[in-house]
Length: 453
Image (cartoon, rainbow, N blue to C red; front, side, top):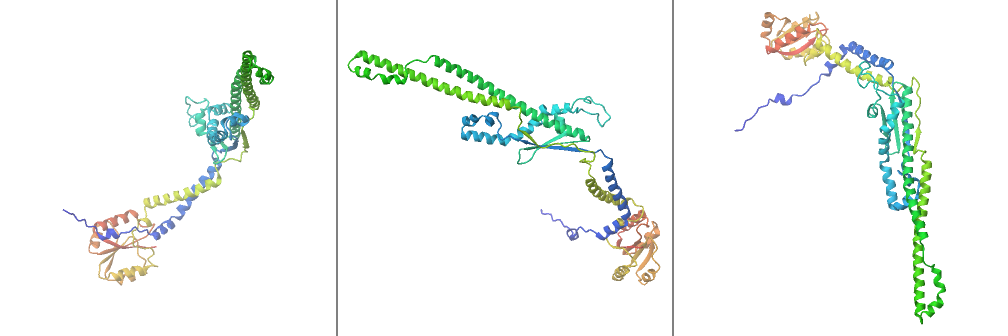
């Protein structure tokens, strides 16, 4: 069975309306409150600028020359040759891609940070400056310091690392950044030196082994040189008629071949020794250069003066004061409008005449349009004397004093509609709400709310 649900057309056509005029009068009525709250909040944020703890920010930029990531490739020309032209370039290109990520990990590692912490005596302090914990007085951990103390950043698209540290002590801020740079450079030198010594050790062992092999082959060389065959012409001629000459010629050829083989072995081994000797010389040069660093400080950390703090900033605090002052003022208005013991604009309904004397024509138009209805004028305050004669000209209205009583109920009972007369800031808000609630329960429509100055 199909069920049909009826939705009143009034609910479909109902729209959200905002009475900007009521909002304007509400804010205008509370302008002094808004000014006071806004000024107090703004002054509060300005005062914070001068009384809060100053923070000093020291920064530096490092250029990392990581086009090549190996000492052998940077110094030894044989490294690229051995890798091959294509393989060598691919190695170089791949090294530059992830080099800065490696450097970020390296500079944040305990190898650097632990030394920085100890050089600057960075220790766990009391919790909230009062409570002593088990870690109080101990050196900070590298992980804790990196997460909450210093910051590192790779500038996008560059080989530049930025270091930044903020502290309330400008001298400490400078020392920490300077210490990071020095220890990072020293770590680079150590890595370069270890790499160079490792390369040198491997090459030296291989060179000694190749040289020993060469000496052995030189000592064991046998046979005749190739030029010996040039003097065997007569012997070759005799070999056609004499077996002894044939055997002698065969022996000479064997000795020449054996001598040629020995010469080739010795030549190859000598070339290998020469090649390793050249590489060993380059490795020794790298070892001598290992105390140089690939890190270039392109922006030195600067010692800051007392007034060169980074936070708090006066301009930022003024902007914050303006924003929060506006928000606080709005909340203050809402709170006062809700809790005020006198009638406020926000308590009024939708149909309002804001000034009886100036807008009496609007009220008169309403009364003329409803001459066939019995209308009660519920008065919370006295209507001005100059208005009363004009109202008395209408036969379908009668004045009633707002009151919680049986007489009031009887007076309103026979009315089709009600018009309320009240004064903002004077009429008792509790009585006003009670009367409106009573009229609602009696199904009496409030046609208009008229404000008396």
